[in-house]
Image (cartoon, rainbow, N blue to C red; front, side, top):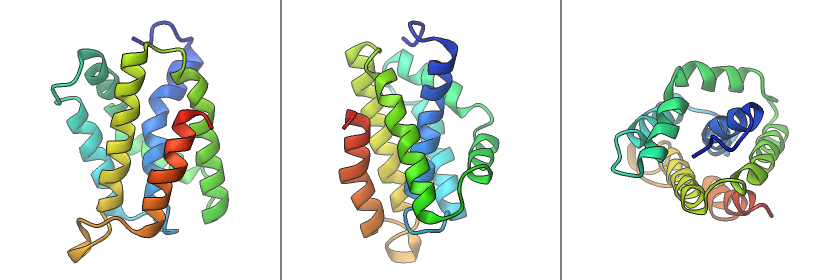
Length: 153
């Protein structure tokens, strides 16, 4: 499904779930280990889902060396909460032109999987015993910012 993209575009698309995961995890100014673990778990499960084969293939590629990739991005990203949010939002927004080049059904599937990923990560640190609730910052990012970023607005 992504064969129509050049290598740089493919790399940017494969990095998109990582940027989304870090954006949501850092919404409160602190990336917790539980959020990183949830991202790894959710992305790993995407390969097992009974979704389209191409979506499963996409997440299989994303999942290779996932923890190392997440840590690399976190280490090389701005440390200030606002700067980090701007940086990650820009990376996500830049990928919307790439999403528009894909088959519509595949792009919609990816978009839905990105939102699912964001919600799962947001739930990793909220609620009773740290699980099950989405904080206001995460909710705002998912419901407004992420939706707009992925829509190319």
